[in-house]
Amino acid sequence: MLGPRDDMAMGMYTRERVLAKTFAWRIIATLTGAAVAGLLTGEIETAGWFIVIEFPLKMGFYYVHERVWEAVDWGVSETAMPATHE
Image 1 (spheres, rainbow, N blue to C red):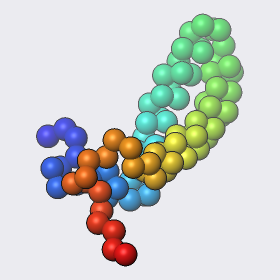
Image 2: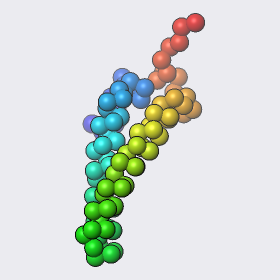
Image 3: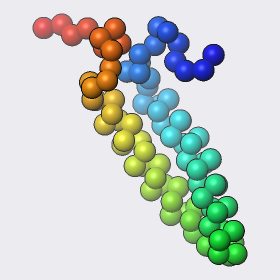
Image 4: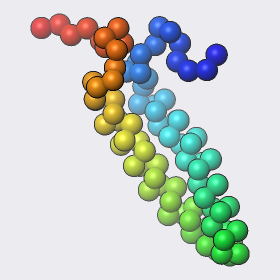
């Protein structure tokens, strides 16, 4: 089954899960970008620098992006929102 279980809301994901997903995606995206950079320039060194610079930079941006969106209520169904007690 693809996607979250019916009983899981997005807010139920832990920071560790978001970080693991961020890391896994960065590996895929960085290797793809490095391959393109290497093919376009014909230089292995350029592809290597692409990995060194792009990987941590975009991983950090993506993680912050996920954390910010976790705080946004827009587009979240009422059934997925945790109950607040006043």
